[in-house]
Length: 57
Image 1 (cartoon, rainbow, N blue to C red):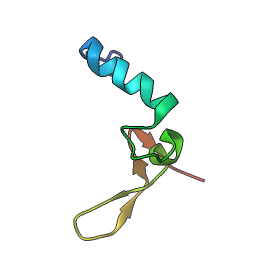
Image 2: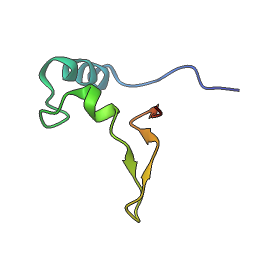
Image 3: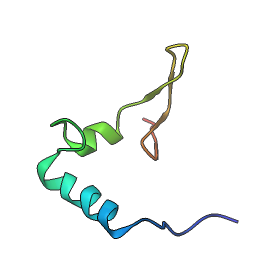
Image 4: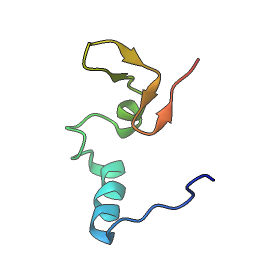
């Protein structure tokens, strides 16, 4: 069974939404760029996953 819902306080949802406009949560980096950045493991190797997205060509 797949999870199909997200439960979060309204305050957090509003912060997430506002970041699409002011980019405060991502230190001025566009949110789409952050989501498309590959994750790094503790040993420094990268994985094809970034902020909830599976990244592929």
